[in-house]
Length: 135
Length: 193
Image (cartoon, rainbow over all chains, first blue to last red; front, side, top):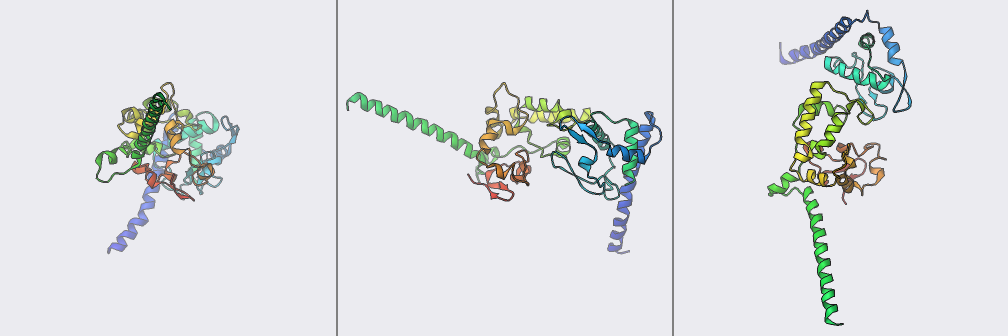
């Protein structure tokens, strides 16, 4: 096998490897949520939560996850207020998205509080993650 | 004109000259901050800002914005910022306890009060001891350094938007250099005052 073939093989296997790394992280998160009392998770419920809007106290207007993460999960989002660009949420175009447990929990905490004014429950996080994973 | 008047005039001229010299000295003092004196180690070193050395600070803070040099605000400012992350200029920027402790310690140890850099000393001098600014751009030193820049180049400039985006114009900021020579305002180019 020459170097080019080897390189092609590595490049083909790499996305599968990162996808499975993120798959493992998501499964671990879901298991942890179940351990704290959540029932089965449902992508449809997750999709509804994703679109659910609340009045953000400081902005004085209704916001949802889509306000900053774009209406298309495969697209790059942009923060409503700061203009910061946010990498796509869909693992189909951004396989690195869910490969770090601590990062997932950090942003759930921040964004649930910012968007809904409270932390998300384990059930809600599981539903949201199941929905996002399917994208 | 009698003798008294002549002495009076001389005294007046003398005081004025002294006052002007002092003024130009202080101007000179600030100009040195921007000079990269080739072959002059002392000026070269003090014109630079200490580089970031903390990975947690770099990773967490620059996920959203330029990781501002710790030496640009006093310790009391950093403590106030780090204890109010749930409302960080309108955003929730909460961290887990361990990361928060690591970053707080880094900021305390490298705050303006601890830094020998000329920038830090100028910034500290420009803050009243009763004040605890949360933004570098609120300090007297920052304002003095940026007051000549018209609004259309920053707030009105879609590629800059805010004075908080240091890197938009200070092209060498990540390397710890805020030299005027390296300033490139998007859409406007070099800045010379």
